[in-house]
Length: 251
Image 1: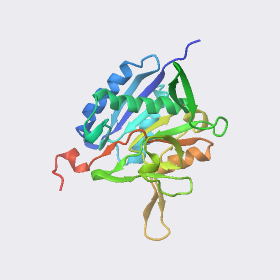
Image 2 (image 1 turned 180 degrees about the vertical axis):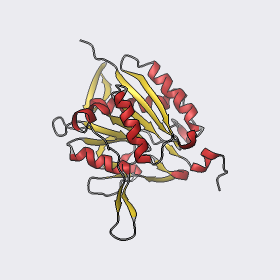
Image 3 (image 1 turned 120 degrees about the horizontal axis):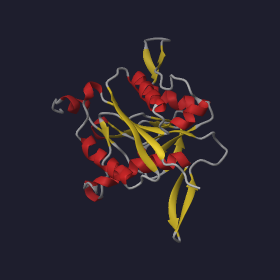
Image 4 (image 1 turned 120 degrees about the vertical axis):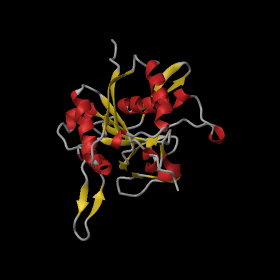
C-alpha cells in the first residue's frame, strides 16, 4: 500500500509584485528539498498576489489553492524569508532552508516528528491522538522587522510567548503571526469549507482600531472548530524592513 505525496501549493502575498532578495536563496533551497522528496511531497501549484488588504489576499490565496486541489498551501510574505544559519551567523547550504520549510509541512500533516532510532524511523506525536480534529495551521516564529527578537505568538489565554520558549521544538500554540505559515486545506475542506477564513476583527467601542488581525482570527476559528495550531520553532525566518522592497535605503 502506497501513500500519495502531499500536493503543496505556494502563495506569495507580494504587493506591487516586489519580493525581498532574501527570497532567491530560499526558493533555490525549497526547490532542492522538493526534488529530493518527490515521493512524499510535490509542488502542485504556485501564485503571487497583488491584493490589498492582507485578509482578502490570504482568503483568495487559500481559495485558489483549494480549487487547484492542493493538500496544503504555504504562505510567506514578501518581506519575510528563511535562510539556514550555522555557527557565528554563517549561512549553511542553500538546501537546508528548503528542508526546514518542507519538513514543517510534512510534520504538521502527520502531527508528528520523525527520528531514526536503531535504524528505524520512529514518529513522535506532537498532538495527542483524539484530542483535536487535526492540525489546521502551522507557522514559524518570525522575528519582528529590523531584527527584533519579538515574535507574534500567543498562548490560548492571550499571553505572549518569548522566542526562547519556542526555539527548537514544535508545539501547539493559541495564535501565531501569518508571515510564514502552512494551512491544511484538507482540514479546511472537512471542518471549515467556506470563507472567510482570515478576517480582520475591529474594535469600535472607543477609538476605532484593529483588535485582532487576520492571522490571529484564523487561529481562533480553527480552535473553535476543534482543530489545533502549531508553532515550528526549529527555524526562525527573517522579517525585513519593507522599505527594502521598494528600493529605499534603511535608516
